[in-house]
Length: 142
Length: 279
Image (tube, rainbow over all chains, first blue to last red; front, side, top):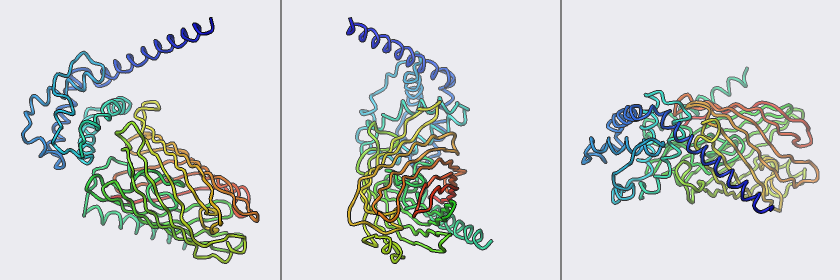
């Protein structure tokens, strides 16, 4: 009896937590301005990256139009939007590039500047950064 | 008047020192992730060293900082100043000078603190595990006569510490929060200003800081202190502070500090003001 009460409570908590997290990501997608908002952020992001001497050379061979599409899909998907990222995995696309934390920091600065340009609220900025931060593991290889 | 003048002179040299470095190198670490300068130097909060490496230098870059801090409580004034350099966000070297004026006794206690810190693993912003660093602070009293009379055994010794820092994204009302925990193995009496005991204790220090906006942070810190001497009681310290980062090269920290009882003088509360230059 006691046991089932506890499992019931836990199940209830999980449902509540599940709803809360779905709601959070949904509202993040909305807070970023949906698909158009995300596309605007990505355009600004690409502009800052193009002016950032720490990372610009790493993208010399990149097909920028395809890259732009992948970025939009990835941010849309991770923020809970109705998109699917279909590009290569982060580990695969960064293997052998020898990306270091210095370049990762430069990239994050550019993203923050892009979100500032687009007046994304601080809370939404931080939630997105929190979702993207673990990519460091796959991107930074030295 | 003279004191104020001296403060600004030292403050100015800190900023000049820092901006000299700016032209030489521009680090890529994110704003405020080099921390501020605690009274013992290096990167940290106000009274505790953190796992962060000073300055804005990331991989294969170097950076650093300079600071001037004044703490004024009822019967004491503490002046601290120092410089630090961080290499590849891996190794930090620091030096600081402290002078404690015990105003009712017209007595000054001085010490020098030299520090080395190494980041062992983890990355403040990116890894699930906290950034973990180990550090050593060598402290030497310049005024050992009084500490000796109070029962201190040595004028100099090492503190060894382990610090873990982590940023939690959007953790509080959408704001990022930095937490730090430091474990220190020390023989220092009143941080070493009253010399050292011939035994060691393990003490804990904790900090929680909220990044309110791009330029403002607010936090609280607690520092447990050992209590070695029978002649005078030593008490834990805590303070609440705000930090202002108008740009990547300058920051100001202001705090209300509660230092409780120091050297037999009770109820020591007052303000803490610190100016830092970073590059």
